[in-house]
Image (cartoon, rainbow, N blue to C red; front, side):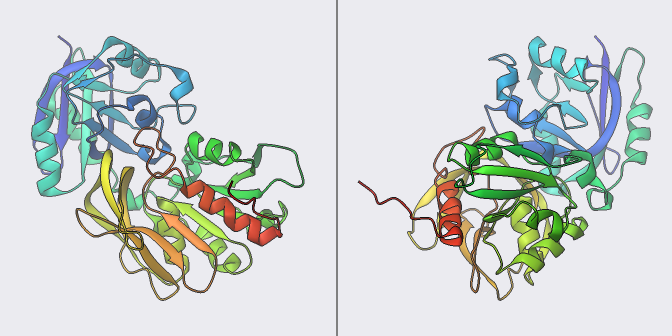
Length: 359
């Protein structure tokens, strides 16, 4: 059996079976999702993290590229109770260390009690606990990854959707966008210009947008200063929407605050209450930061049933709508897909298009 060790902040070392060789470090987090491992592994929001799957068997329906959310695996390493060969072959092909045959309940308990923490992982024929501890010593706190946006964003503008001047024009700031967010907009007829995470106001206005959209992504929203400035400058000029990190960036731009969560929300069964309709929907989530105080220019429209953190914000003096969860629902329940209809309805008002009447 190939040796494998994961060293947690504080010095606790857990031994397991090596499945894909290598050494790595990052913030160790867990997801409770029981499906969607392909989407999770290719979600850019997991950049600089070590992903622990709490569901005991990962890989039982294979690996299919059409379910990927980006062009590569983003977690630095993977931990599970049991991984199938199809998943470990994929991880090894991309140089991502992986280990299984350990009690993931122990790791999840450590994270829940101690919070998201640094870790080091070592997998290989001759690795030792000391190799994992050395990786732990080299690990950088998530908030100290100040250039993380550059690791996951496009380098230059890309365009998706119809080449039609009548189509809603969306300028999407790519802070680590999932592919299904782009496709959710395109499927509804939008033309989407995907711009780098540090795009300027001039870059955005060159696309003649009907909407500014701030994507999901990894890391601390305080490190996305260009996107924060962009939202501040364009609020009231064009409608603005955001998902996950995008909600946090919008809040910071409009006078709100953000904060690190104890261990975040990661899974496909997070209940969210809409304060207007009083309806609860189940949502997919993946974030370690949240909005603390939304400020005076945003109102809380939705909250997490478990901990009351803000899950949806709306502008009080401008067209702004955001969600902390992932309404594109890949993976996850489809309860919240109408978010994209609501977002594009703002572009109709912006452009003067007539919204078709319901039959």
